Image (cartoon, rainbow, N blue to C red; front, side, top):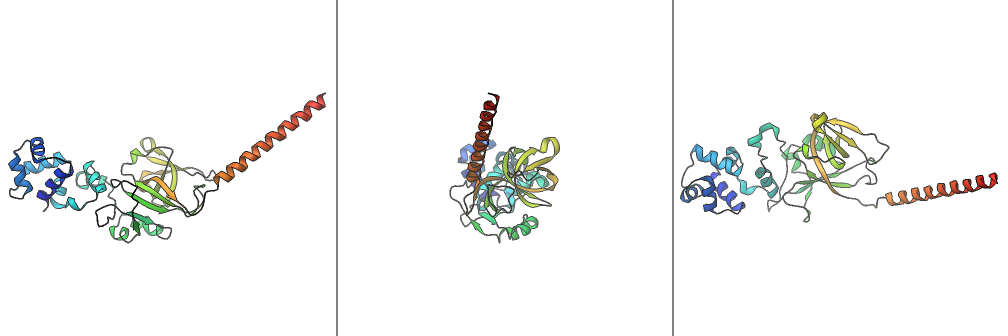
Length: 269
C-alpha cells in the first residue's frame, strides 16, 4: 500500500509544508506526520478528506505508487482525470515513459498504422513502438507521432511525420484546426476539424486538398484525437511554386482582358 508515501509525495510536489497541509485538512501537524511516516493508520474519514484535498480517488491514493508517474500523468490526475473517480467515462491512454519518468513520444509509422487501429489501447502493443523525445516539447503534455499517407492534406506531402498532442476532452477541440483522429473504420486520418459534438454528436472532417469532400463522423466511431503540433518531411512542400504559377496565370488573363478591351475600344472608333 502506498498511502503514506503518496500523501507525502503529493504534498511536496505541490510545494506545501506539513503545516500548510494540516491546516487545509483541519488536523494537527503531528497527525499528518504520523500518516506520512506510516506510524498511524488513517480512518475512513481521513481517507475521504485526503481524497477531496488532492482530488484523487482513495483507490489511487492507496494502491498506486504516484512517484513512478510521469509529469503528464500526474497533471492528468491533478486536473481531475482519475480513472477511479470517473470510471468508464474516462479514455485511458496506453503510454510509455523513459528511465526518468518522462513521457516518451511513440512513433506510429505507416507499417504500424493497421496494428495501431486495434492495439492503441493495449500497453503491450504500445511499448513495442519506437520511442524518442523532443526537448522543446512540454513534459506535462502527451505527444505521439504518426506517419501520414496520401495527398488529402497537401501541401503536407505523402509520408510526412505529424506530431500530435493528446486531447482528453473532445469538447475542447477547436474548429478550423488540424487534428489526427483515430477512427473505428478509417483508421488514422489527418484532417481539419469542425467541432459539432454539442449540436450533432459528431466531428466534421475536411482535407486541405479541395479534391476531397468533407464528411462527418460520429463520436461513437472515434477512438482517439490528437491536436496537430508540427510535421517533419524530407521534401519541401511545392505550394509556393503552385501559388506562383497561379499568380502568373491571373496576371496573364488580366493582361489578355486589357488587350481585348483596347481592341474593342479601337473598333468603336
